[in-house]
Amino acid sequence: MARKEVFIAAAGREVRISSPDKVVFPDQGWTKLDVAEHFSMCATGALRGVYKRPVSLKRWTKGVKEDPFFVKRVPESARSVVDVRFPSARPGRMFLPLDEGDVIWMAQMNCLDLNPWNARGDDIDHPDELRIDLDPADGYDFFHAREVAAAAKELLEELGYISYPKTSGNRGIHIYVRIAPEWDYFQMRRGVLAFARELERRHELATTAWWKEERFGVFIDYNQVARDRTIASAYSVRHTGYVSTPFAWEELSRIDPTDFDLMTFKDRWADVGDLTDGIDEVEHRLDPLLEMVEADEANNIGDAPWPPHYPKMPGEPPRVQPSKMRKENWE
Image 1 (cartoon, rainbow, N blue to C red):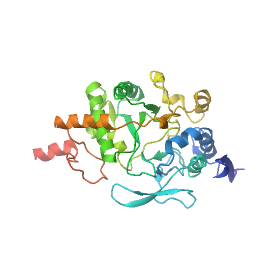
Image 2 (tube, rainbow, N blue to C red):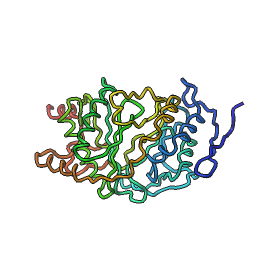
Image 3 (spheres, rainbow, N blue to C red):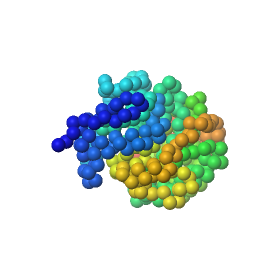
Image 4 (tube, rainbow, N blue to C red):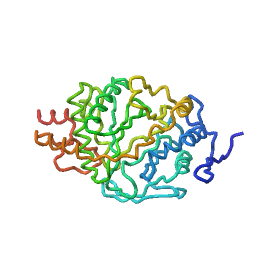
């Protein structure tokens, strides 16, 4: 008989998991309780990725065979919330994880991948997490992302940044750097764009082409540090069944995301523990990247396209697909 509920101890309380035997990954037979137990096991690391950050609740209520949905209103069962303002200037309220029990609660809400902002709830306008999202284009894969990640590591070291890489849990790689919360989202984004362009100049596989029709190789998604943008944080479970797994730079040449699914990741955690430990001990400055922005602008290299739901930004190029623009010009 299917159980109606179980309870998982976390942060000094019992967190309820309803319908624990509900199958979330039909091909593997993995259940909602399997997901909750994963987050219970690595709760220290999972919390580090979302702690005091507004989190978008991406709920897979019918399992991975159907599309998830993002919660627009925080459920009443949420223990802590924070008021935010979205890019449209519309106000909103989001979940704010404060302890390991809140991580388990997100599993109860059928969240597999945890999607935090790159700012903290107590200083929502000043992000402290620089994210470099390496996303292989069609026809490319994780092993191409590894090549670009190696070049990114070299450039980050030249800039004096300590960085923390992880698999995305799909085909890409994410790299994190802690930044002092003294700059706004616009400055952070322009800094990451300048970094991406320098990487593009250095490595033939790296690209900043926003429009998919122009992409090749590995896209450095500079817009992932804009306000309200999220990527799956460390130890998230992806719809692929793989865990977004932190790794040491020394492992880059051999790391493979398919080695770490919801079950095999248990051995990884037992072997190495939380490789994001220490990320909050050093805050870097954004100045080196802003100097790169100034150098680009001196060479008449300005802004790049923003995501479609953002207001038109000063200095932004036309938000029109290049093929459509060429057609309009021809006509």
